[in-house]
Image (tube, rainbow, N blue to C red):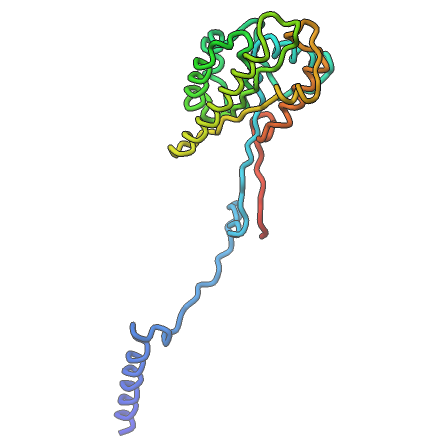
Length: 248
């Protein structure tokens, strides 16, 4: 008799368990929580999700230009500037045709490209714009690109006038705005092209020229400092750096 009662009670317990620990009542079931496993020696521990590992790129700077850029390079070297991460690709009397034929500009590693051409061939405005657009989307897709205004001359200059320079600069600046709007709307990941207005900076601050077209060392240093200050990216050797944000 006692054995029958024990079996009956066992059956009742089983029925109650099936009733309360069901898919309709999952909270009634007991849950097994696995103990955390130790991290094996030599493995990389998990980083808490509130920590973010970020890579901050930096870029060497490449100045591309004509005799005015050649003069800047010479002035900076004579004055002992630290140009470890700065390089120059420039030649006296050159312009669009020279630029379009330079294979170095289609093979460079990511760099901040500073373009300062046009004073020798203001009539090639549209060719410059087409070349800049083409290169910015292809060879320079990983490069921040800055176009520097053609800078002013003095009254003693007979080869070019400030009126023509201003017309060139205004058109170039309008084209850059148009390019950036178009670039932003077509979902590409290239950098915007930025404009550095050293022309009006020099007019407001004053400048010196021995021949009406080129500048004194002090003026070249002034232009260089203004350009470097306008660069928005970090300048370095191209290796960049990693850093964490957040808390453990």
